[in-house]
Image (tube, rainbow, N blue to C red; front, side):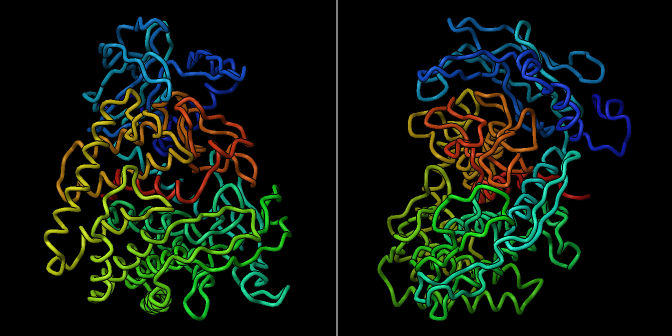
Length: 583
């Protein structure tokens, strides 16, 4: 039985997600008053005199899988007096299809969202359709879908957002009737003044992705981004291979996700010097320019090399050599040759080399190289099977554990450890090391699962002090890598349930009752920190910190409302796991 899809949308050709994301959002969010009335948000004074609104009803506004976990969080009274019952209503007929009681009220900590909350679980509702949830005296939620392919369009949009980040070429796109695009930009990248070249001399370093809300390009942040996108390909290829991203290269015989990665690789090659060193970044001197990318005339320079960027480069190139080989053997061989050249450079420089960034006031991305060297060794071993790389990995990994929050740009150990645990050459691994790393992984994953169950918003990072940080939304998405890695080793529905709760938090089951991804879900960010201007679709904003209340949809607030390639890459991975594959 299906509720609401055929009649509401009027045409079998209209995607139901269009209704949820376009039609409903247009009705509900025409004005601030409508926003207040429909979501019934209270105002909470802040110390600095501003106000912050906590949503009365908080759930995943994109929707749910029929057999997936479905939960809602509702604001209780300030004295802990809670509503009694929630009802899920068919958006077509107006009839209730589920009702249930709330949990006892729970008080969240001051460092979390500092409020009384109740929750309800309606996972038993499995019929596909369009619904909303209502609570007497509090109003109703946004319309949401229950649908097997509910995550297909979000995946496509978030993955395609990487294309819209391209530097050095014109990009164009449309979403919900609005056009986005810019002309060719930064075609003079980059100048050699700070890497030994004569003043004003340059060599081609055009291409690649803009890093975030700014237009600079950084090898270290490319590392974790490329790593997570390739992990999505490795883990969920059957689900995502056929998803079209509408790229200029589409239809060339290479799947679109790999086409997009190759665009970044074409730039990465240009960051490698003849002796294998890799420039840390390609940026302007400052962040001063704040307009459309094609209007940026500031000179942009190669930054001196460092071992973290060089090790990241090795790992990325080793990955590319494996996955491009099926579609372009010559390109894959070029990747492996580049990886070997920079590996030799790392061997000549066994100690950490920090890049000299004294001439730059742009993003530092300063990281100790230990985890990046570990990752480089793991990927080279998996790509070649050569003993040298295996022994280097096993020497470095002696005391390494999985991270509490998944892979991040400054610590990519989780990517390295995952390679070893899922290696294609099982017979060559050290059994004791495998056992220790497996135990480390499940120790972390058990905490993640428990936090997702304990936290009233289902946030796998929890809500304790320290769990809120710059880019925390990216870490919520990144934790799903650990969950799915564990699930591949020992399948358990609890892993996938926690991963679904991570997505639910990002798409509306949070203090603000809003999607944190531009263009998707109910009341998504409209003013991200993005120099292109406006809310280009498919971007995950950094999210609240230092508490779960502190997010502001204000362009100037780069602390909580910026976008970045590493956060999007983590979300690409998180969404890929639940894409409905073609029949």
